[in-house]
Amino acid sequence: MSPHFWRPVVLFCLLLASYGYVLPRWSDWNQNSRLNLVLALVDDGTVVIDRYVANTGDYALIDGRAYTDKPPGASFLGVPVYMALRPVLDLPVVAARLERLSQGAAFGDTLQADGTGLQAGKVRFALVQYVLSLAVVAVPAALLGVLFFRTLRRLGVGEIPAILGTLGYALGTAAAPYAGNFYSHQLTAALLFGAFFVTWQSPVQSAETQRAAVVRGLLVGLLLGWAVISEYPLVLAAALLFGYALVRHRWRWLAPMLVGGLAPGMLLAVYDYAAFGTILPVGYAHSALWQDQHQTGFMSITHPRLESIWGLTFGAFRGLFVRAPWLLLAVPGFILWWRTRHLRAEWWVLLLVPAMIFFFYSSSIMWWGGVMGAGPRYIVPMLPFFALPAAWLIGLLWSHRSLRVAATALVLLSMVLTWAEALAGQLFPPDTISTPWLLYTWPAWQSGDIARNLGMALGFRGHMSLLPLFLLVVVGVALLCSPRRKKPEPLVRGDLTLQSAD
Image 1 (tube, helix red, strand yellow):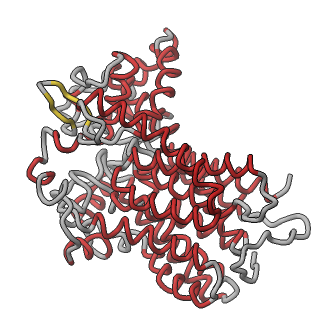
Image 2: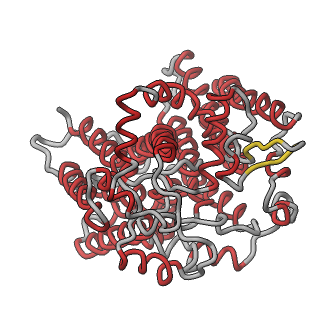
Image 3: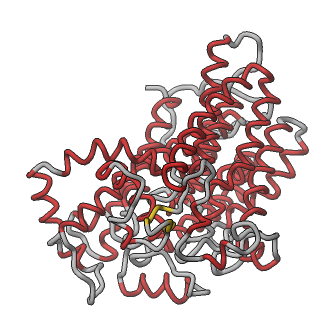
């Protein structure tokens, strides 16, 4: 089997297994609010979440009825998944297995002493949350890793540095903890980068058939539209990518992209009218909580401030670079890429998409991302665009042994820091702790308070529950880095060429 085929397959499986190994965080208002809409749509045939609202504080209240105040894109994707899962959960053999899991000692160790225990109903809810997180978020996130790898290869980066750069992004940034939870941040990262990938990979010559242009244009429009209905502020980044597609493919893609984007837009309009009596997305305007924040500026958006800019970058509380220092390579990466004088349009996209997302959220009075978080969760959608020049730089420097070692050490350090925080405790660090490393992450590891994971389902406890994950990653990386058995085939190059170094 060709390495061009099996390496992406191994990479996808490694990322999916890593994201799915740790169970979604329980008692998380953000995730529960999105999941409540799925349950209401499928079980009750309504957008009203009154029956489930006790498990979240993220809801809108209108005329005494409760609705999720979250953008519904991720919930819409979860509906067919839950419709397929529900009959399976009702099977007697599955119900019996859930009952046995509710009595498991390893999971029981993670519960609060004054809690209500691990009831079978809770286990069922957690299983639904897990499957939806896996199907709606983790699978697209793992596919994003493959697209990231293929993009680096097209840029001329050798296979080994491309693998390192991909693992650095996928497992060594805030993308990792949010790829296994029912948030929309990593889903939208996959949607936006997927639109960029399809646009760039599509030929611009007249040899492209009209039918292919229509299909690709429809796909890009659909991806961008779904990103917007999943996270409304991403409309700015989506508009930029829409413009990039028009610059690259001209009028041939205009109508298909408009049609593709119209579908999720109409779905959102129907939902908003059913929930709020208007086709406008106004959920946050009716939030039961956080009204002081939402009524400040425009829905909490004012202007960028030094406090938030520092906090999102180098602050110990939620700073990006203190958790993923390897991303600092993006700065020289952008500079050296510009000096090549190639792929200028793509360079601007990779620069402006992160800039738009970063400065939008640095203008929020809740820039840190709410009550709980592992790193700067709001800016997760920008990370693949920002990480690509950093990974490209690793490929450029790969032939220099000392620089190769330094880059590898930075990536490994980022992975350790990212997963140390992602695996600590049963909830992400709360916003009441300004130094989560000292007062939350390290104490959790010292006491063996490790996030619920599949190792615990096998009976392992505490730190030992991570042993299967560690072995999985070691085997996966060994397979990815195994040498070829035949002479390498020529790279499929873009306009930005590098010396291939495997």
